[in-house]
Image: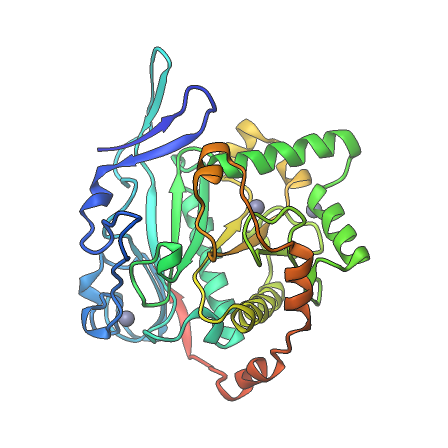
Length: 364
Ligand SMILES: [Zn+2]
Ligand SMILES: [Zn+2]
Ligand SMILES: [Zn+2]
């Protein structure tokens, strides 16, 4: 069964997906140690093992190489165990207080590199920018599907963040509804805009820059900071300083800056925290048809950004039961710590590891 159900009291959508439970290694209880595919031997994302994933839908690959063969740099395939089904039409069902939509949606994996052990923070900036560009391509393509209301890109790194595969990858989930978190941000930014005529993210970055105590890193128009009301210790947001609602519109120059800032922040977090698990989420505007329907002014009051959640604490009763997170590290302290860490040497290592892949996108 795959179904989206809406909580009749707080209007929160949940995906009921029994197929997900059949995944070989990922069907864990939270109180058990997670099993992770660590070795290249069992890894379905290795170069040369393209047939162990569903056929690719997009790839950056060497000229002249065929889809689903070696020669790729970044490869996107449907998730073998999707939370939502790509077949069918989303239909709203109402039965008394019960509201549901059949579980139609698209769930993809972005295999970020052929290198099994080179996690995102160890990638050259050019490669990170390339991966961000692949996100843009998929967001644009998936939004053209009239069934899609929103496209979420995220990354689970480490067992503490829910990852079951070690090989560097991100995920993309296109849903027929706007997820609650995005809807809350759209609603909150709309209210602020109606009151002040300003984008709250623009005002927020302005205040953070002016007061500087929350700043982690700033470079060429991209700001990284610990949010004032961080829910996780060492949480960081990365926000372009110039107003832009849609990540898919960011040009190549901006993607390289974002890649550089993202790498810097991840290296600083690693320096501060050691080996750590984290989630990365990309928040951008929903698909045009959903924007038109629900938030027609979103391009004015919404502003895309990346959120990074180090998973050092485990949400428990207070978090799940009240939605109130307990964060043991004041964000200004985390910011001070991260800000003063010098990762220049690790960043400079990039110059030696620079890649110039003779590659071009395929399957578009
Ligand atoms: Zn691998
Ligand atoms: Zn803005
Ligand atoms: Zn956000």
